[in-house]
Image (tube, rainbow over all chains, first blue to last red; front, side, top):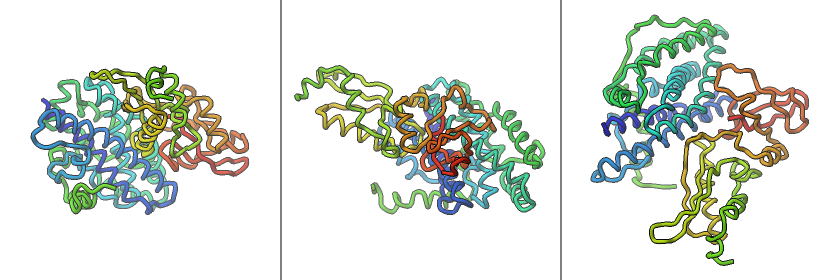
Length: 257
Length: 174
């Protein structure tokens, strides 16, 4: 049971860290200054959430097994290999163009919003507190990304085509968020974690609403989903993300500044 | 002033010392104006020493000012002779701009940042809620528009006044 809480907490933390790292690649490259600032602010919120979750995971790991050397938020972020990362495949997908980044954020924020709403009732007081805190921030992310989906989908021919392309690129990675793996089922049964299958209908509803306003087609229900990320089986992209994210600590162990 | 005297003094004194600690990103605000100090406790350790516990809560999860604030709280208390200082972080209940003091709001306005509106009146987690009427801190007009919900720091949004045309930061209701 203990291992399931650790894996679940790491899964939530990895989701937040990896999409934050992706978004931060826009720093200095955003389409306009205000939106460059927006996407990097979203990164900052998510890195903050990841830190709270990694700190808690480290605490759980250390109380579980002291012999393996002390875990910290830094060792968990910087010194695990790709197979140990449990983020959903969606979060590691490349930024592509602005439309693809927006759509990835919209899909993820919708999921995170619903997840944190329920996590506030977790029987684990720390996970409930992190959810309560994070939900306020995710509300901004969801509002911002929804507005952009509408603006681009119902915009010019060019922006619309880019959104259609983004849907083709990303839709196959959305189903994974609602297909629980073993540690998720374990913690859901204990009231510690969220039963992600229960979020699917609300997620579909929100996506349908926003896509309708954006005049975008919703891919047919039951489309095939790529899975594996939650259990460490990633797309080819994660290794490159970690190569950049972890470079300093790998090249200069224990460096500080 | 001896340390002994301080340790026996009430927590009121510590609260007044904490007024000296400011937000590094919005230096007109003290940590008390900001509402991040949740409690000040005097504890006795098992070996009989007294220690001061300052309980704080972050504004936003990723706010980089929090590390500096933590360090500055410790420094200011040390300067005043308080030796055993422990700083505890709590996440729940989550920080809200409603905890900002009225003095703090006035200071923000004088500094050129629009203070947060009251949460109960305007702030909600709904999508596409009506835009808040934010008053321009320069000319006082409510005829303003939001440029972006995200600004120079996590806690601010970018606005522009349609009356005097000045851009300004709004400390957003949270």
